[in-house]
Length: 148
Image (cartoon, rainbow, N blue to C red; front, top):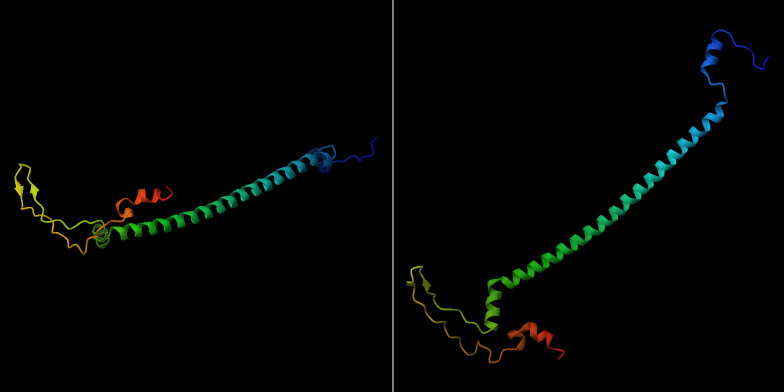
């Protein structure tokens, strides 16, 4: 006989349900599989977390760029508004030697003239510059010709 005692009754039925081989040898691959799956999951979470952090830093940088561009756009819009104001346009026109026009006349579709045109009022010589500066006449060409 073998060194194992024979089991009877209920103990024999339970013994038949258990595997006959060693339990440690069957458990090792399962434990290795669980460790590999947990390690892979932790590494994938680390990579995902790093990618999200990098995206967050890029988002902060881009939001800062948007804020600076918005500030620059608002400053340029203020400059455009200042140059478009009626007083600024009138001052610039006077610097260029322009005078306010007289009463206009309009042509009707059938060719008739509506209104009585009048010439522009002459400006006093004291208000008109005798010689215009070159930058007033052509500001872009004067800036480019400085090196010549």
